[in-house]
Length: 394
Ligand code: FAD
Ligand code: DHB
Image 1 (cartoon, rainbow, N blue to C red):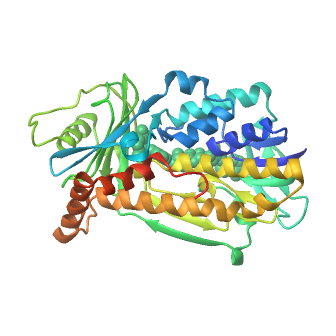
Image 2 (cartoon, protein in one colour):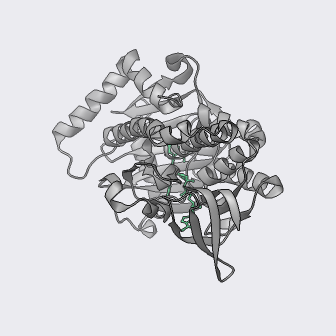
Image 3 (cartoon, helix red, strand yellow):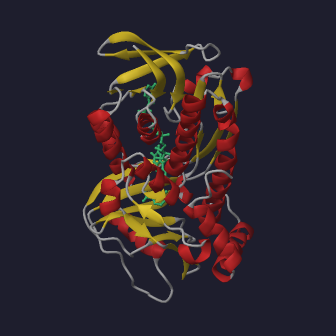
């Protein structure tokens, strides 16, 4: 098989790229190692920035998002038993975010691609990418028990943190910067109404907690837990009790979340990682294949979408003019935004979580920083600008 752009990975970045290329008359093939049901049900992110929503609209994939997505104009930070609202539009000149689950973004993109796009092959596992330095890179993959080859003009690795495309960049040209964290998240989905009409990020001496949602009837909740935690050690009642304790306010003693059946439970490790450059020859990396962030700032999916918007624009420019200028600038353009989001995610993570080795000095610094955000319009605006997303071209 032959195509202009071979896309490895059918997660949000690969699927959105395929749609944006399709709109510009550029053909592509998407190869995804998992089956459709798995990809559509994998529970992950829930917050979309304005720029991500705009990209999905441009891709023609926002009908359900516009009907069912929940716009949010702020978040609540809780620390020291107090609540502080961060007013996004007021602090950023009108920006907001949307609650719309990654599972739904993926379902919408898959349906469109299967309806009128180029081939989207599930259970097609890429084993190697070769010829990044040539004008005809090749993708080797297995499908229906057979080894196959996809010949491409360009290859884009949208294959996530454990993908194979990164290895097409020779080791001596590739640099990975990483940070791991001494805690994980225990995430649950529950058939219970959200605790509040906005998200709550809580610092507490018992550890971090986050109250999010998927719909007016479904809550998504997270607790900081030690690395290596077995979800089986957290029966439902223990989770609810801990959420009550970490989210409670001094002014409302005895306050409790509305409980409901827990339908999913998983432990998520946390890591920051950036691989540079994001391009070698005719092979590009996008989304989690190039960088991951700890989830505390809700940036992972949004960064992935931003990469492919930049890349689709570069392919369209090349297609229309023959110029490789934007393709050549791709890695540098993305990395500026990536490092800003890495910093913000690191800041949110280390300000809100309790490191097991933390001393009282570190806790007082965290509380001082949170007091500053609560008391200073400038500090709150810095958080709001980063959370709602910075412009595509930093
Ligand atoms: P992915 O979604 O990882 O997609 C990569 C795709 O490539 C996958 O479908 C995979 O099956 C496929 N693939 C991999 N290898 C191959 C191969 N060899 N051949 C073919 N296909 C291959 N972000 C947030 O903002 N908030 C959150 O709460 C949050 N929770 C998360 C929880 C988990 C467990 C994880 C892993 C991530 C979470 N993220 C979260 C991050 C966010 O989900 C990702 O940033 C986002 O999925 C990135 O999209 P992507 O398309 O780049 O990568
Ligand atoms: C969700 C996940 C996040 O990491 C976050 O910061 C906010 C919301 C969510 O899954 O809803």
